[in-house]
Length: 207
Image (tube, rainbow, N blue to C red; front, side, top):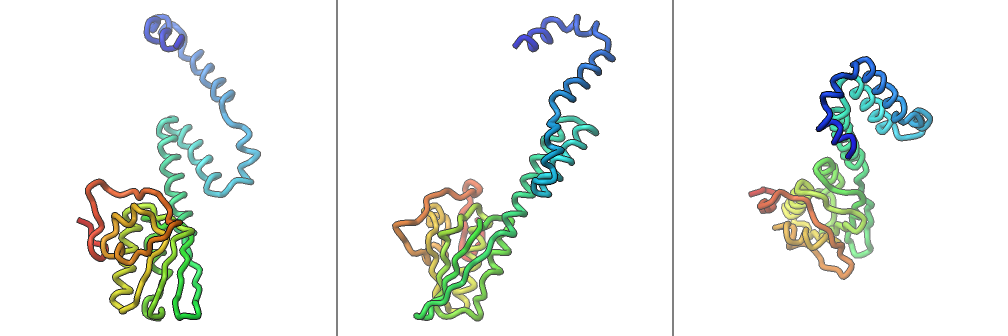
């Protein structure tokens, strides 16, 4: 508050301070506020985090802190999306009754939608297939479209498909695939990020 008042009402006094002195003050502020301990941990953190630290530091020196912060947030978000896209997988279990169960692990979202579809082999699967999302969480509209596309793929092969442990929000937003869901008492309760006014139509078409 004191600094704001000084800048607002005593700007004429600030103009009398030599620029060289202000530069010296800024150098001391940078030296005092820089996280020097980051050098000691940079070899122990994940490579992408280390890359973000180095890149943000370089951008700060070449441009300014505001641009560096925005760039760091964007790079971290992209790195997080890429990391989660590579984590999605499914454990396959075949029961004695001829039912094949896919237990999906990892979040289906825009970055992993294609990988999600590659987990399934509709042509060689048996007549009854169960997709269990107990260890997964549908994140966004792209994931909903991927589930609709999966349902269409199995229906085209005349395979009975059951979707289990999807949230109530998924029940509402999914159209064709919603008819294939099996209600359970332990269904999760979470929201799905979708564009307002957009509903997933038959076989994944949005309107």
